[in-house]
Length: 197
Image (cartoon, rainbow, N blue to C red; front, side, top):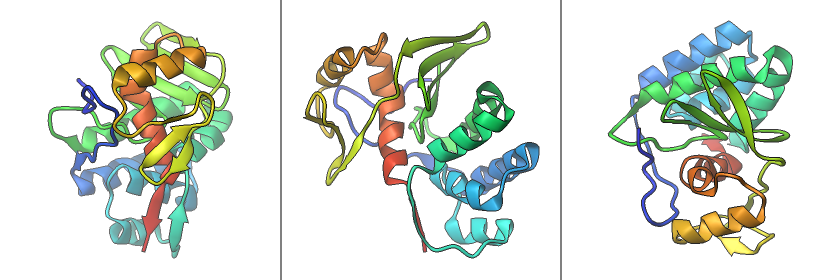
């Protein structure tokens, strides 16, 4: 499936079936024996209604949760193995509607597999395993328009994908176009996280 990102970098807003997003998140929580407090941010990030998610998970929590998907992947990846947790997180994309993929966190489906940022690097994975495409994770920082790199200095919003890919080459990313279109928008969304009213 194609990414929703065109010629310029942007943070797309996915069309989502919020009931399906919550149902998939609850399945994942059960499968991984995840804490409801870890799961709620993931569920909302992928489109679940915050009030419904709080009710279903039985948690009373308010405020901003930063990096909910990356935190979940790091915590449960260490416990259960990254590929097992990644396969589960990919199921949340099934709740997206529309004809393109809108990356949500540090993982996004691509043709024949997925691209993911783990705490120690970036990988492209398929049925035959995973290969490293960057030796270190990308550090993105908040900017009023979305997010930015400090080194090299680049505010990402509305930049041509070619310029973003060029910055990624400087950061030793082996597949910069793929990372710019499929992974980076999700990293930016996850950086800001979700707000739970």
